[in-house]
Image (cartoon, rainbow, N blue to C red; front, side):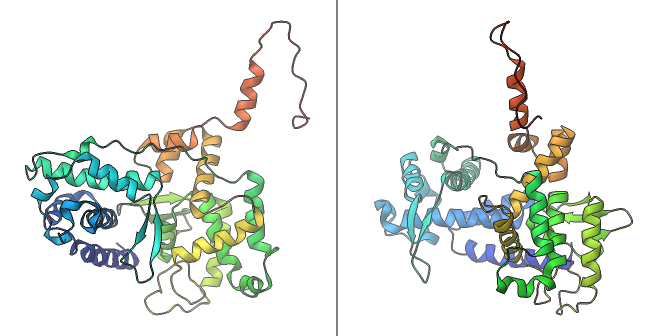
Length: 363
């Protein structure tokens, strides 16, 4: 594990333990049980979601728990719950006020967020029921919120070129943005090229160290979700962009503790996910103003291009690091618009119907 990954794990472990200290005692048993099979980031997410649930129970929304503190809740208290209580919670978190923040703000949860929060509750109740710490499992009776498929936003081939051109040339940038463009141009092109040429996640990109990249083999090491390390290959265009940036990178003296980072910020520190999100947004607003492009959308673009070229959904799943190929199939195996038009030409409703005339885009 690299120094960066170790530091990141330490930070998340501290955050997880802080949240865990607010939860009922039986939660410690649960989190200890799932520790061998989950990452600390996953456990932190579960802990935050459970804290939200227990705050709801003790906030007065459920009368029989209004005089309880979260840490005083017991397994016996959970047995007093029914499926309707959990359904009321899911309705409540659609839009509610965060009373614990210094500045009160509204929190909104869409169907996917509510589904994730229900999963955290179900997992806890399932564990407690299995260990015979509760006699009933009301969470198993609650239906999962229906998830509506969202349109997959990705870049077309010409938009990919426009995005890279905007980073290289700086056209369309404001005067303030142009002041820094010369200093960040090579880095930004390298980052965009790496996203579009390998499909890595933003967390994987910011974690790359100098010794992770092997230009003799055109490959690099990434730390996947869950902590597993994998080796990914890159093509000649990505190689050229990385090498050009690396020459500039060698002239920069990093801040102590950031010497190993491949990508540096203007402050000579390892670049952060937020900084990467901002630079992608900056160039995307120029190249594709009608599309909301994020680093994850660049990953989707890579997956789409790879599937269109190879037709191999298992290859796409492997390169993207998907554990379940069905996740990949859902996003990338859908019929493309071009294939849809082609399929329409195969169907004749009458034998004597005229042949389709060439469309303008076929001439």
